[in-house]
Image 1 (cartoon, rainbow, N blue to C red):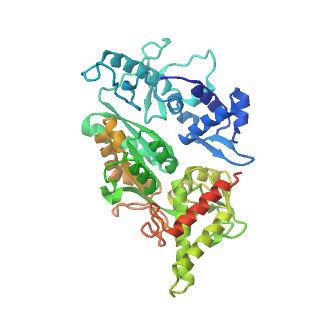
Image 2: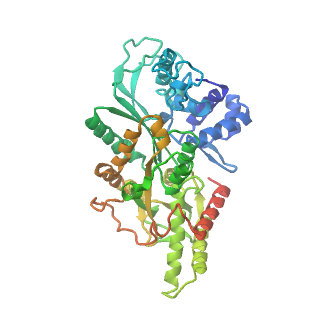
Image 3: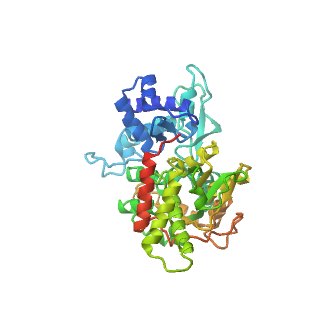
Length: 499
């Protein structure tokens, strides 16, 4: 392990961002001045934390950086790994970046005394840094004596205190928690939208299932972020055993990199584990009279959807608008033959007009919903399942499912290279299989997703969408018109000024 100036500056910068979490963004020069950090070096650090899914950035005069995750969900160990690499003192005991010691005489032998000792050092370091949240770090007081506790973790980044105490509460060095001999680790990388389904229902249910089946405890280390960002993190070395992403194209990137080697589409439902449709969310009473896509394109209507450059959900939004444009072009033709170019031209025109009304383009679908909840915008384009639980809880929104929309399916796959490296292949395979099972499917439906299994009852208020389907506009294999539409939206996203 090394703790360089990069990690020191990174943690100091995060202290500043903690103070404005949920509020305004901070510009890099503000952070640099307050923490006495060179601006150029700070920019490299902030970009690394952004690529890892901890920060979001905004362009323009009011731009800057902000935390995506709650400070309670970020640990010091996570930040140090991002900026300085593994916590292990030597590579042969690293759990995240294992490398065999080529010049070690013990490399070919069953055991190594140095490896055993350094493994204990690694565990002691990780026990402190992986249990110390950024929130605790930011609000700790010099000289304050807090009771030292063990921590139970449901994932690598979300640690929760439990009732077990250290043997010696006054000890200056926290002892490692006593864990069951058969505890297994599983690393999950997921897009942000279904986080509640995993944390509240699916992960605890799988842990019970695996315990009953094998007698082993499972610790699921989960990370949530924009689908595209998660895929890039895996390509960049984030060694997730399982990837649950928004679009097939993000999984295909991992396949092309050689990290997924099996045919993941041979799983049930073609490898898909959840489904939804693109819907419109409007304010209570629908004051702008939004009924469909043409209404969202009217002058004076403020629209929200995330940036297609980073968000898989935004890709679906763009495809839904484009596909609706094709359907509407056919309807206007009154059944008469319509040249493909003419239909595509009308679809691009609809997307352009909607895009002209976009007020803010956030990094992910979840961020876009948060912006809408803050009172920005008249209509939000998002997953139906993002809106249903909020309406159910009494939020002042209404849901419009246009007659012309897109059926969304979300994939899950074992990342073979990393699962095999961690010797967790059986666990990863079982988790993905569990996602296809009735208990996980019921959890998805409960939180507003639509069932892939026809036998699973759907309690939503809306009838199935009847417009463009996944087979009409597939996100991983776009035609020239769709590609043009996505390119336009991405360019607009880069130019968009966020307020």
